[in-house]
Image (cartoon, rainbow, N blue to C red; front, side, top):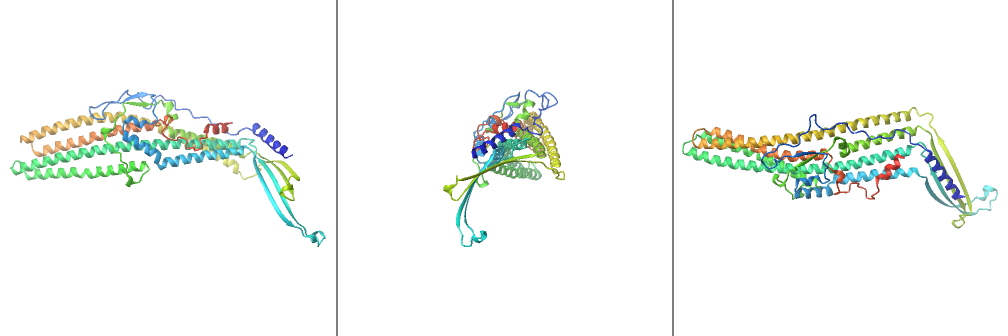
Length: 505
């Protein structure tokens, strides 16, 4: 009889589940923007070039794929090692992986609501009967009673509310997946930019130290000429002031370098006292020659933040279905099979069973369910607007990076020319000063012009590397090819495709 009860419950559950439909909107992925480029005018085929380190021309290649380990294009072993350490030790990555595992487990837990739940109970009792209660004062028997029961309950998903809940949770898990991808991309991009910043600062410090040495040598020369009466003391004091002023620019650069080193150390998951051993100079980096320009229609597929916003839009759509299902009748099926006996050995003796079904419909709730549905619809509109906003920002990021790369190349060309002209002017001024045809102030002006041009050129070199990394980040970073880390963060290794398909039925 017990087997018949279980078969009846399962048959009823299957019939109701198969016959049910999922109320609410079926999610449709938003269309990609119908544009063909990222700038109003056609993108140039290549940037300008300068005859200086980091001055090579960069070509824009339409729809060129991005490698998963895009930072290797800078050809720096130190950078590759640092990023490998960071991907394994950075706590933000660990937190994002744990959040993804949590989201997946929530999906798996909710999937259990699609099937009946079965529980077993065993209740042994020892009783003494008072004979006086039945008119037999001398009869006070003591006996044992053991009750065993098997309970089956099932809430059939007639209108698809449970399936919509699973769909929403699966979409939230997808959001956490792309949050993890965004964490990887942000981490690697920050490391590349910080390494470039360190290299640029080291270049500026080296340039400043060279300038200080040149100005110190110039001061010695001016002092010698003062001793022989060729120049005045005012010119000596002016040269001393110039040297002291240049020296004041060195500590801020050293402070910035120390802070960047701390940033690199923190990104690898270490404390400041455990500073990384890798160091970076502009000479140790190579500028990528071919730059990808993904098709606009593919950008929404590649950007983790856009895919994450799409997942939240999907979750909001499913939540509308949940709210609608909650307004409809709720059904339940319960069954019980049990036995009562005087001892465990005698349990099969006396059996009882029951099966029941119920239906419940809210008649009055002061509008709570109606307003919850309206709130879910409003949340869906909000998610749609946020998705559009993130898509616009994604396109803006790519456009900004492309503009910056072209401007960086032009700036480096101009800065290189300015430095060469300033150096030629300085050399001429020095020759004229030695020939006593100009005063020392003219030499100082030429020196300051060259020194500033020198520093500007070093900064312009670093900008090209940093903005190249910004373009790779803006295009999504090639996470779809990455094999360097556990993308799913799922220790059980269960594919999410099964969850998604369950939610869509």
